[in-house]
Length: 353
Ligand SMILES: Cc1cc2nc3c(=O)[nH]c(=O)nc-3n(C[C@H](O)[C@H](O)[C@H](O)COP(=O)(O)OP(=O)(O)OC[C@H]3O[C@@H](n4cnc5c(N)ncnc54)[C@H](O)[C@@H]3O)c2cc1C
Image 1 (cartoon, rainbow, N blue to C red):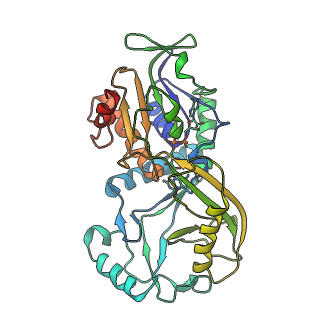
Image 2: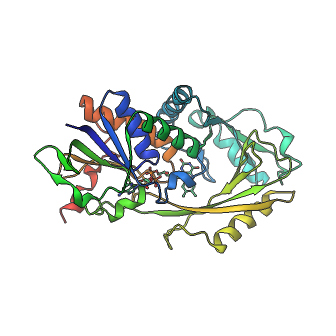
Image 3: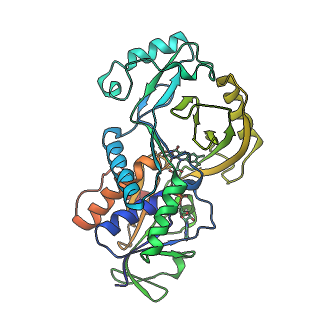
């Protein structure tokens, strides 16, 4: 074989999978078309163990989060770069009632481990409408995905693991248990295409439920950078002074264009949260590759065992990708089980319909 694996796409999915395969000693080539839009280049990169208005614990948080920290932290050292930021999330209470509800909820041990038992500091009081105080979620933070992806790409290029090209699935010739593509002999091709997988006949039968998202980049004079703020929307402060505000969720108009509707929604929420003026510098849009049951979609094609997929990372690519890249590689290389909740085997009936 010229390559054990060809991975199509270098978003978070392709990048985390490439690292795991490369580290297991496999010969990998990433084929990526960087001129296309990528959700990973738009995402805020936040990881948050307790989400939503009801403080719901993220699925598999106790397993996903430690693995993600270990993965990104280790790569920071190897790549001599900084992209992992551990930051508490400050959630100002909307009302006394919400404060009481949250305090009751945080008594549960599964939740308590992610909540600071001291009240939030007051350093944000000059900036936020937070007259009832707030709680702080720990074990959270963000990954600067453009830095992570660019630094990874530089490494992949240096080690001849990267090809800038469009991969057309129609150019593949299926052999018994390998694939021929542009005169190369390849053991397995794994598609990590994000929402573009909907146009790939090999996997377009999977139940994608894409969600468009938009965010703003704003400046707020002297806004403290030590915590992420979350109340319906998030403010992700950056030391550069360009802070991200997001995000919207929309299941229609699935394109990569920003809209006035998205900006107005975010600005309305931001005005309710902030006591101080802000300035909108930029607006961005992307499409999250979510699945119908909101779980990743990973595994091999029902007919072609040499063709795989790593997708469906939805709204939580930062925490799902490292753990399930490892699970997928251990499945392929060591014969371990692939978590049945992410295995595309759960959808094979759709393929045979
Ligand atoms: C506004 C917004 C905010 C978000 N915030 C967060 C957040 O705070 N935290 C979080 O965890 N997640 C967040 N997400 C979700 C996150 O972006 C996704 O889970 C993740 O980026 C999906 O990564 P991916 O690699 O599957 O897809 P992508 O990043 O879209 O990558 C797919 C890649 O495949 C390439 N490609 C496709 N087809 C081909 C082909 N035929 N040939 C060559 N290359 C090809 C594309 O060029 C692209 O680079 C957010 C998303 C949006 C839109």
